[in-house]
Length: 363
Figure 1 (cartoon, rainbow, N blue to C red):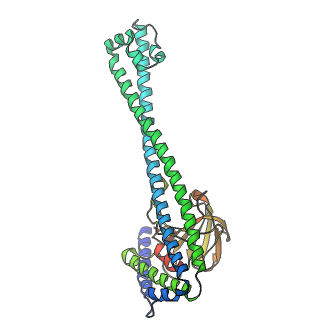
Figure 2: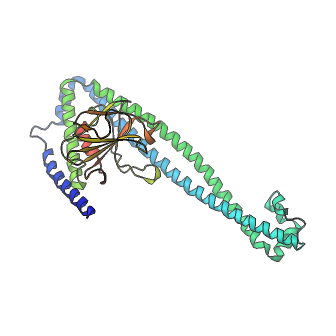
């Protein structure tokens, strides 16, 4: 019954989405790229610098995502190999115990000079050369010795693979760190060059970018439903955050990215994207996080904050400062950013890609 109500609620949300999509139609006086270039003719160099900086940030951000994917793949490989090492170590212990038991039995029968001859041998080859081994093999010990040789060989191979994988992981993590720093530098350059634009140039550029973003949003709505219903504003001051579409990118523990990472300066204020009620939390992967349940039922998740500017269960209005950008949770030590999610069916529903909505609101 509850599941049926949840599906009905999501269906209603999607119907509203299609209605909201009709509001995204471009005005008859749409801004063209040529108009932007003309308005920016006096600051053409700054515009070119901004566009280059934006492209550099996107390259760096996607490069960082690729690096994280490689790190996660190597961690998964390392875990698999570690499991094989553990299993073969257990097998080796079992076989060793069997041989020791056989050695004791042979000793009791007078077939070995000492029950610890195998343990005292410096290598399996040394033991194989002993007369005691020939006697042991002759009365049924050969299979155990063969098993011991095979188990040691397999264990050694997996240990070598594990050692190499650890080297690969260290290099991949170093590469990811370098790319993260490059992304941070590119973000700062993009925002600095954007701030240098002025007057009609900046106004028309933002209008043009917004049109492009809304076109993408409409395409996303047609393909899989919008990430937003109703009134929505950017979580940051427009122009003061940088982000790319990282929806579905690999994350630790076999997870995939279910939001958009918005990179901004440390302690950059973040706002309520809609009227509603907030709940705060300080645990888990998200660290300091906020759920904002909008009055229209849509849930918005903010993660990795440095601090709150609201209290739990507080009612907020759209545009109110609710927290400050940081790196809490599993983002600790990384570039400060907001992990932002949208759940159209409420807090318990599935997240949808917020990127088209964020581009439309934040450009």
